[in-house]
Amino acid sequence: MEQANPPAATKPRISLAARLLAWLSGLGLATVLLLLIGLLTWLATLEQIDSGLYHTLRKYFDWRAWYIIPEIGGTTVLLPLPGGYWVCALLALNLTLGGLLRWRRDWQRVGVFIAHMGIIYLLVAGAVAHHFSQRGHMRIADGATSNTAEDYFEHVVEVAEIKDGKPDVIQVIGGQYLTDLTGSASRSVSLSKMPIKLEFSGWLRNAEPTPVDENTSHAGATACDGYYLMPKPDKVEAEANTPGCVVQVDLGEGGKPETFLLSSAALEPVTLRHGERIFTMVLRKRLWLMPFAVRLDKFTADFHPGTMKPSKFVSEITRIEDGRQAKAVIQMNEPMRYANLTFYQASYDQLGQGPTAKMASVLEVVSNPADKWPQYSLYVVAFGLLVHFVAKLAGFILARSRHNPHV
Image 1 (cartoon, rainbow, N blue to C red):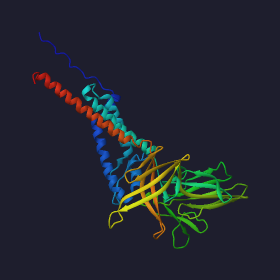
Image 2: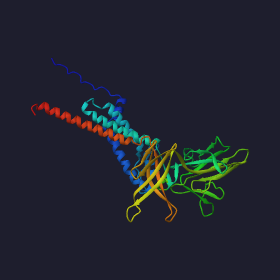
Image 3: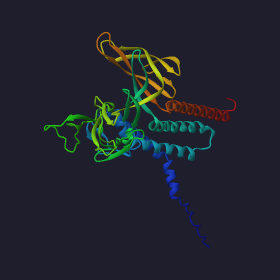
Image 4: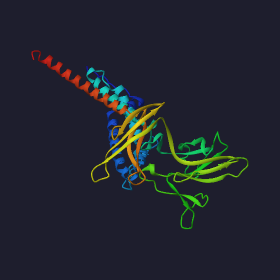
């Protein structure tokens, strides 16, 4: 009597959610993401030669850049790629899921898990720096004192009421209310401490006030007092751009609104009158108040012989806070860290000509809550690799001793 073969065992069906989770935590996705990061970094390095560092970083690694189209040497490369920020975010998710789901509960692999967490820590540090860091510069002449830094890129509109020849009340319209006003977009702003209503429009990232005449093209541009804002190509170094916009000012009391051009290249502020009150309005880079003052006691600049290539910049400064003073030295590759701020030696200026000209130090000021996190993450990775090496070595010695008990 023939015996029937038992039915073949059927494989359990894997749900879509489980498949998605396996893909997100898989080594294949991690490999592709690491290759993409390498490709994006290489392309960004090539593109910044023509476009400058700031614009290239914004294009390739800003959180608002979901995808990018590379441009190399002015030629567009028809290769759409995902934005670097989101590639890193997906890699952080992949490493987190992989570490939690795929880690074997084995004491010999504890070091790998620690190193895994160190890499995630590094990616998180980059995200924190991207969203919360600020950068500016402080220019101080020999013997002078300053407690403000100037932002590299953000321009704001400052409206001040003048009393006794000095600004008394100052209100600031931040750059986030201005930079999206391209084309026909406009935005109205009412000042709480002043009887002024402003309507901004026509934001240009780089422009120059230009006289209106028959030899210049200004179709569609708003003219004011015989001038209009002529768009200019972006500077390679974005901090050198001089933006501009149009502002319509309503002082109330039934008067007719007036239109003005605001430009960061203007030498004088716009002056407004409301009865006996006087107001000024200017477009400038945002000023950043420090929690302490810095006095430049001595600045030294050394150059390589026969060149203008710097070999050493040194700023000897005094930090002044609540009446207390502390000496510090800031030089190339040796910044000063204090009160969650980092001061780097960036450059220098010469104020005036001749042997009596004063030198001015240019300090880059950075506020970054994740300033030391990359360093700490490397410590974590190094410690994890050391633990992994020791665990493997111990396992090897134990295995040898079991096989060769007399050795």
